[in-house]
Length: 139
Image 1 (cartoon, rainbow, N blue to C red):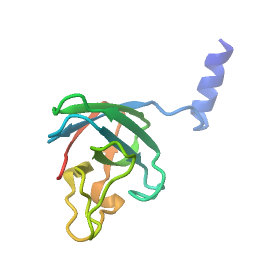
Image 2 (cartoon, rainbow, N blue to C red):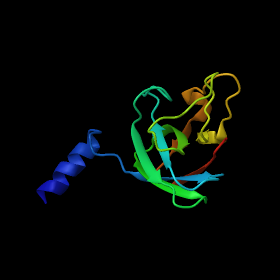
Image 3 (tube, rainbow, N blue to C red):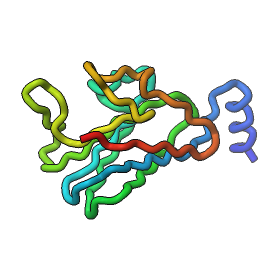
Image 4 (cartoon, rainbow, N blue to C red):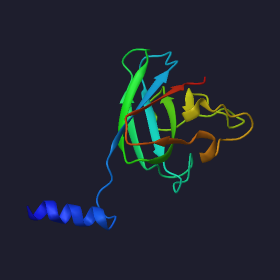
């Protein structure tokens, strides 16, 4: 009974924990087996693409097929970056001009032309219901 009263009080003053939602990220165009998919979830306050992400997951690739990865997130605005670390060297390899030489992708299937995307290019809303997004790897 005391916990219920405490929870209702915290909710009333806005300090109760937010309800969590499941974000399912579907990664398509995975063409090679082996290596690892590295997914990073960013919030508006994180340095998108160059800083430490809010959450990340690493998934081993057994077969070249669609991969699905779930994250538990509070409602809010997020952006996702992913790459296939084909040679498992724990970094995104790049060519001489700095363009990734390993498959990569962003939420909203943003396709960079000259420079890396900004958070607003890749951002989306997570509400209280389950959300699914799809990211097609570029190679």
